[in-house]
Length: 447
Image 1 (cartoon, rainbow, N blue to C red):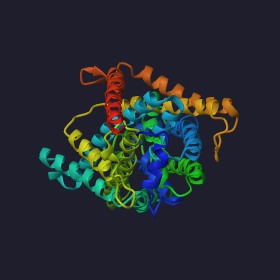
Image 2 (image 1 turned 180 degrees about the horizontal axis):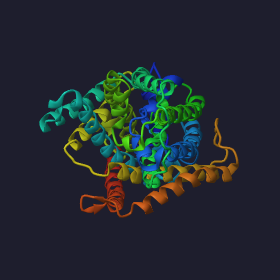
Image 3 (image 1 turned 30 degrees about the vertical axis):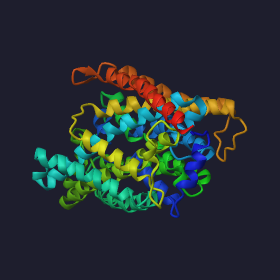
């Protein structure tokens, strides 16, 4: 029999002696959202130095901060395994909860296929045979497998490992910023304005999203009611500094805007010190691994939560003594490995479209729960009552709507990115009906 208390039952069977503490959760969240300055080059390329600084100061306030506040409230009020899926299900019912999970798992296919490709390109600069087509596939598959194996050690192992990985990738950027700030060129580079501001905003959105991913492991977090709000706000401040400091230092040192393109951090570092370029190249691979490792932890809890509700096979509930849902973890790893053969163009846009739809559902859940369950204990509460809940949803929703509209004609192969995103979203309906049918048959057999 499937109970509304499925999450309470799950909590009793997945307890772990070692949980994510404040710092390990912060480090894991850092990789779920950022992974360091890698990927920010397109912001300067599109908007110039002054535009990039404005974007990286303004966008966190209207895009990341509202999302972090929403996650802080809901994760502290409902610290359940499955995170955002549980919130939406509780507020809007099983259909919309399933759609939330569907959108997240669909976007994971694109995430987990794109990141290994970047890893291989970086490795190829150090070891050219890595770029051989057959080697690309095996290296990417090995990377996914390594993340699965690491995750078998538990969420605490992922979080604690993220602390070390974060330090390793940030040290070269700290050295680069120091060199640029202490040995500047005779004159700073022209601040530039760029002619593609919205492209810069789109890149920044991609580099500032994923805050809700940390919520899926809530039962594996120490004192989640206290730690989630602190992590959301503290990690956001750290990420903004990590993004801005190297860019401001490069501007101060006279690096021209024309030098900025995807992957140019390595070139810029080589110009400052040849060994530093190699260090940043290695840092790229560390960043990719850290992101993949944390995403593996986050995404693998969604099938677990679906199985707890009966919308996925019960076998996904199996876990190790340390609480790790090993079947769900292995199944996700196999799915991502199969997706490595696919070729994706415009990943960034498609990822934002799918993620954006799931994020809107989470804000709706925030508002609905305020209306339906006003007495729900909320250790952290967004101030302002219902108006406050609606207010934090406005900025991200407007930005997402603008991104949808501005890029409605972007192509992925012969199909528009928007059309592909809508098709993927629509497929969630028959997937739900099929899962509901199977759930019903299991219920009949169990009764």
